[in-house]
Image 1 (cartoon, one colour):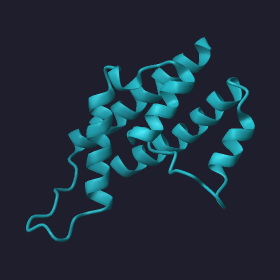
Image 2: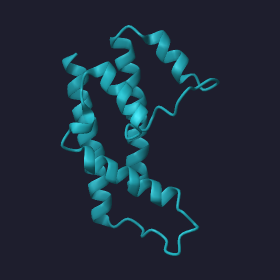
Image 3: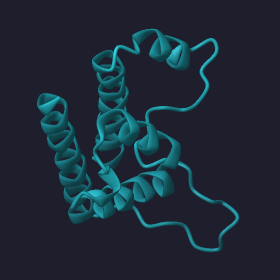
Length: 122
């Protein structure tokens, strides 16, 4: 559930950024930035500083101040620890519990609903 929540989050982030670029009539810039052959940045992870700065610059929404932001980051860390474990550490990260999965799903859901509200207000 944690990994699936991140897949949804990343796909939504790419879609939301594309929509923001269109709304700001910067569609051609989006095409350059997101082209797989010459991609400038990994644009799907909203928790990455560059990505949420681009989002905020385009939307005017200080997303890092949103009530769900800490939980969304916690989810991202949970997912990264699960998918990209550090094999040099003496103790492996625990498999997420059902409660962890529910928290991840809720954080991503809150993020998506928030961004939809922002996009609809533009």
